Image (cartoon, rainbow, N blue to C red; front, top):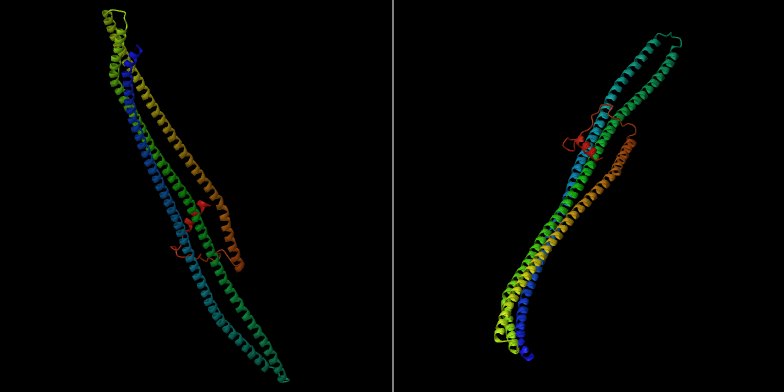
Length: 450
């Protein structure tokens, strides 16, 4: 009996081996497809990463070029500003030199003319003085002619000698007084010219210092503007960098979502194909198993000596009905199993997609927070640099004013106390209006910075 059962079961085992072999071969193909898809996804991500690196390098190069261009612009603007003020200073120095030379020439001419006029006046005065002396001698002769003749000769000689000595002394005193007046007059004239030159130098020194104040104020304003422009460029480049990061992140997230959807779709398609194959194979397997079971049941009936042929037919009919019910129940179990597997797969796919989207949202949020933090740090750094720059303005201004005071002291030491503040009504020397900046605009620029 056992040998018969083994003979009956042998074909069934061969059938199961064939079915398992077919199933293994069928499983190898999806695994290969899955591996190929994974390789393709990795290739796409690698190409995307390569593209992102290239975009990042291009942005870094562009930012570097923009910073270099800005530095060149800053240097050129500063050179142009200093050059313009240097030209104004050179024009002012030329004007000062011309006016001082002109004042010296006027002084030389005035001194010559004054000396000539004074000489002519003194010659006239000296002529009148000599005429007066001659008149005195004439009066003396007339007086001597009226004297008595006793001892007249000796008296006349004595009176003449006395008169000559007196007149010589008067002439000497007159010439000394005349020379003293001439020297005093020339000294006064030289002092007046010295005061004029001193006032001229003082006024030019004030204009130079005012021009230098305007120059320094313009430099400080330019430095402040350059600090702001540098900060704005750094801020703009930082925003461009994070914009690129967001764009790359969105592209990468879209690619990840697309790959996950494609993977999920492939899993669903694979499950549908597998379910369809299992659903298609089940009737064949059931039919083969039913045939084998029927043969085994008939064999067992033949081996059994109990029962009549009619009973065997009833049992066989009952067996066939039970087999139909069993096959139907097995089909329902398969359907329920497929449905459960499908629902679990859909749930897993949807959960994976939600988790991926949630993770991507967190990454985007972290990137935005990082951008906000970096911009805040950049603004704080700019505020610190601006505060430090403003603190350095005080000693710079103090040093400039100390240098101006030293120049004034040196000028006063050179000219003494002859420097006056326009009390003689001399107009302040002004170079050409187009040669340097308007004073009011310079003062306004200076007041905005200091």
